Length: 235
Image (tube, rainbow, N blue to C red; front, side, top):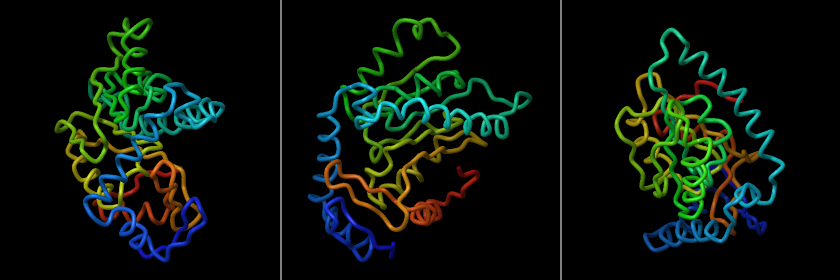
């Protein structure tokens, strides 16, 4: 990527490659990058306010907008006359199960959760396997994977939708590409990824605290092209 960017301290980089080389240019640096990212979230409370960085009021509009978008996707791609059974989703960077609990489990018969921070995942498991959720035979959380995105390979042909929200910024460009190439095998015929992310106005912004990068729309589309993906719908 030849687009320039800045970090959270105001430092400027001429290109993304310059930044990545500095941050993750060898095995040791890359290990530290991922370790520090997980470590940051390990220090965060397993609550909605915690996983949303103190902005718990974002939860309701976030779910509402995602709901509107998902309804369109499901009606276009999985209409009632051709809908496969069961409908299965993967919630990547699932945290405490906020998106699964409030959105995905309403539309999908089975949802798997993928989250590298163990106390987040245990909070999700406790919520989604007890109380009212324990009695949902046709809409339920099934698997809870405590694995980082960059190390995960899905079962072949399991998912109709792989939902990736507010977590892909922790991946380097190289791992972004290899993740999507691996994850593609996890989609059923006609399945798709849904990626919901913050967008930089141009280039990128590096967050030095949680070790993540916010990419521009063009940056994302360049990476999608390198993954062999095309954008079906954007909002």
